[in-house]
Length: 436
Image (cartoon, rainbow, N blue to C red; front, side, top):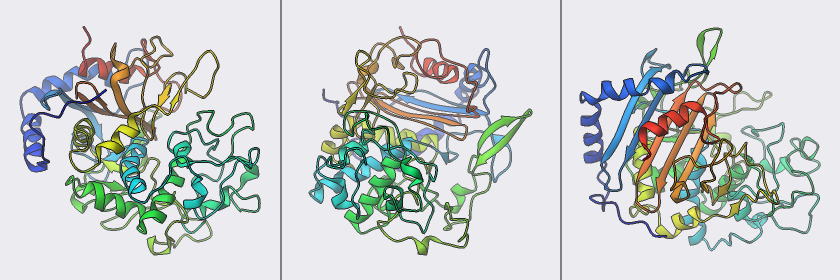
């Protein structure tokens, strides 16, 4: 199925786009939109949320709904949450990393169905299937047979290869591998380590650091002040950071980004015995976890909106259309008659390359998140440290939806009635994409 071009956005004009969004944010509609988000911040039968923000657009690029409500916490202190405040977007990061990786892979002649070992610098094999190559396509679609081991994430200064070699210090008794019956290529199991390996391949293919490469080929051309682990993000934007929070004993407690290092310093996971390591100690192509490709992208809801329009508009000359089509094609589909993967209670039932491709199956354990045309939507959810996020577009008519909710607990989440999402997400999507 082919997307139509985005009307009025055949060339990228970030300044005009931002000015238009700013005018809308400052309008009288803002108060009404914030009030409409009350069911999201105070879901029936569930704990409160700290904040929420959303932007939806029609296929013509015009905003159909946008709003922000609740409180933001971070370096600037408690303040109203706004659509231009940056935060850790969680697993949406994987999709953005894929949009940078696939064009590079094509230029380098990388065979997505070849042996990933050839571009990783070490032999990657499941010990139960030593003769079966794990491919880049398997990594990008979470069908590699890998899992996140206890040493996740491997810290700066250590080699990612040590997860997969029996004599490696992070082998963890083989916990980075799934059970033998989940043969690579046949079973879907969502695991962040797949994208650490993708980032490692990217560094070896490009000869450039993962974060710097994404900034050069994607963020800079889009005129976006965003970055992995705050890489390249300006001091002015860092100062507006929104911490991820959990509610504990009646108070919002920060989990990530309560404090942000000054520009251009970057935060890293460092080994306990070498706490003084810096980015200068990173060895190119040896540890793809270092810059958090799996979840560490910092950006705002407004930035997500801009990225969604780029995806809906076939890349807008920044990402080749062929790469985006490859991302959106389903590489794995859940078969309930003969289970072939782990769906996270129904949330994940179709997946492309770094991109979720829901099927629209109804019911409280289904994935009909957006109504009857859910199967036309593509994008990715994020879920970490209290932030629940989504960046989606409709590949048939060009509509877009981006949102972020902060304060979601790890357990005891209020369930949605009509899908496998949470009640706050369902309420927010219902406001943003009203159904007939």
